[in-house]
Image (cartoon, rainbow over all chains, first blue to last red; front, side):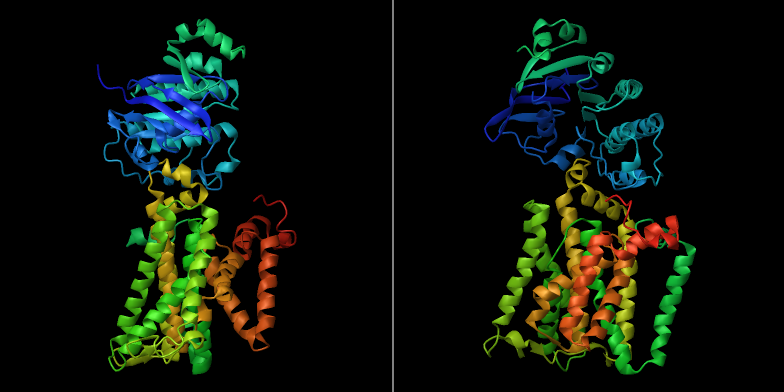
Length: 240
Length: 351
């Protein structure tokens, strides 16, 4: 079996004594579309921040394509092929769409995947983003702003992208469209990990689901396994 | 060449139309010929309005384009001035002295900024602390220079001079040509025009585009794969060198420098020039710096305190009604609304 593209071993992070993630070990094989679900405060966003180096883990390791990147800074991890969109949109709101995309196009990754440009152009096309548009990002409707940030991350040519609640605040149609684009990108070999609350969206796109609860991995399996998992239903209904 | 031209006329500054460039060339030509109508004294005064432009442009780059407010750009102004005074003062009689002194001044500037900037940016000091740290640096320098009175504080034959400052600093010199009077005016003018155009190329380059991204959101930018620490440091050093250029021109103009040039009052002036014009445009800063220096100089003949009060009132007014700067706001709003909308400009403008 080949190395998983992303693996963590016993990842633990405390914020002022509150355990945000506790001994999290997950493994995502290359080319998978994985969804991470769990109630608020389950540690999903913290996990993402540890994966891409915004925060340093107190214990545990992060391995990207088999390489231990635990001690690397965020930009070094990005150059090794990881990309992230934030839970609250962080495209550059005061800059134009063109400036947002231009800012990414100077990335020095030597080993960007061969079809990185194709993926980027596909996303621009499907998301209806004009890379020459002088419209300010903050004037875009919410869903397009989300798409813009995804396009920016794709412009960098990643091997794996982490999306933190990409469809939050989107209409059903916009969510469906986002899902379709992600599935297509995934079919071209891009590994995608999505934190999401929208159950319909998760059912639509996920190949496997990881459930987090109180900072730990609670369950993991296929969509069918997870939706039929009695304990998962219980914590999601808040009866834990 | 066409690439350079494209960068020059790129979108990251106001003034991009053909009309603008026609006017720009016309103004340059005018500035080159108009000393013929001036006395040498007036030409030197005009050079004084211009010589603060580089420090202001550097701050505009650092603050307006990269989001780092330095309240201590005058530290580099002072370092360059003092180093130039020491080196060229020790080489009096040698025609190469002023050139060597200038180069040494800028080199020490860059080195100081690189060391200071390294600790600030690689230490990931929070953005809001940077103005305080930079201000502290310049105040430290002022305090240090202030106590250098006495014969023991000399480098070679040059005395630092404590609060009385360093005097008798040689003018700039190329070969046998001593640059004073008219030639000093042209010397400053060329530096200002070249400095402006080269920064304009920089902000329109790929490097400049990433700079804007860092200004907007450093973490997001780092997560696109950029080492923001290194980039902030480079911009910081460039801004320091530009401040140093102004410092050189200042001592070459007046042949003296005192510690008050790196004091609190002087430290606040570049911030005012940049804020009033509009920090996100090099052109706006160029214009506002010339205008405010002219205003200050002219009012000074009525009494210095009076001049500062007017400049201060101007700053407060601008911050209240034109938070993005007067020139930038006009350049953005006028084409949209026409002259009649001038009143109430600030209304309906989201931050």
